[in-house]
Amino acid sequence: VTQLGDRQIDPMELTEQILTEFPEIAGLILVTEGFVSGPETINKLAARSKELRPDVEILVWKYNGPVGDDYNGRVFAFTKDCSTDVIQIVTWDKGYKQELDGEFRYVYDYSISVPGPGLWSREQIKIEKAKGAEKIYARADGWNTWMFGTLPYLPLPRLWLEKHDLLLDYGVNGTLDSWTYGFTANFVAELKNLYCWDDAPERQPALRRIAAREFGPDNADDVLKAWELFSEAAAITPESGHGLSAAAIGIPLFFGLPPERMWQCEAEKQYADNTVYGMTTSRYWPYLPQFANFFPDFSNHENMAEIYCGSYLQYFEAKSNRLQVPSSEGEGFSLPVYLKYLKLAADKFAEGIQFYRNAARNSPEYCRRRALRHALIAEQMNYLHLSTIAILEFENCRFNLREDKSLIKNMRRIAEAELERTCEAKALMMKDSRIGFENESDYFYTPHSLQEKIELLKDILNRQIPEFEEISMVKKPDSI
Image: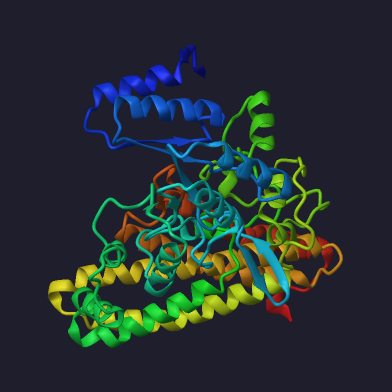
């Protein structure tokens, strides 16, 4: 029996009610993040569902949890204990080992920078095949990803198609492509649909036709060049799926502890400070969910930039003052390696944007509005890259400022560039309301919240940094 507020809900009764009242329903998805029953209950639900409706599909999605020996074992045991009446949905890239310059980090989930499958899905698929399961499904992004979670329809066709091919190679029968974006038709979903059929067309001609339709026939070459460069860039982005790049342009830079921007009672403060997985918020920056924000350790015990690059879970544990989840042995990108590849990705993306801009500007009148909207999304994708770099570099300088006061010059340079970028991003948002939106939490950043960030950056540049320079007797840049 599940408790929902002051109500007790019997899962069996609820299942019977749904299947009876909605006779055309094709199936049910049980998400174990909220539905905490084990395999025994799930098997009973599946068996009863088959009695009522032999054609119905019962899908179970064992989604959440850390990648590590202890929890991995629980996931695999859960999969083994489910009957073949239950179709497993595997989280496709969870636990993929991303390696750069001899370092590695496990992807948490929903990252287009890695093709998959991850550690969980590989093992779960083996288990299901050994059980003789007729179907295996996967939660695998089809046109958007948490890696750029506040933008729709990402123009990375090569990477989307590579993921699609791997899903087929591993015998996956169906996918949950998105629960976030998908409210209008888009060319990436169109591509996914094309290659779900046996008589799918050759890929390069199909891509060229779509490019010509979206930007005009004379601009197809530039669009294809841009798409390839975007795909090359995203493939080397060292992101963990859920991370800073989802909303970086809306995340502020903090030089010092900011003033409280909203009132919370003491119990709420403690809850917000120690909870990062729920939809809580910070009284210091209440414009983003707590888990999507980046907040320094102003006591300077931990360099949060280094922790973030090292382990996604360690980073969130550090944010909530817990540090209970150890990273796997040897896991973690160093800050220099992380920034190296993020900057390479940003440079390659910027190169592609030149082709995309050219194509959009030269597009025929009948498709220009659509072409310009494509270009806005690409521009914002790179802003997320560049703002992630700015957040990590600014925090690393702030953390080390006591030992090397000359770092204040770098902090000024970073803040100036971020101010200009945030102003440009705000202008883009005024032209396209899709930017900044994420369905689960609505707007992660809005023109209003970006304006608040702009004012904070101005205060850092015009007051906070000059005050620090005066106190520490460091010469100001304009007097050197």
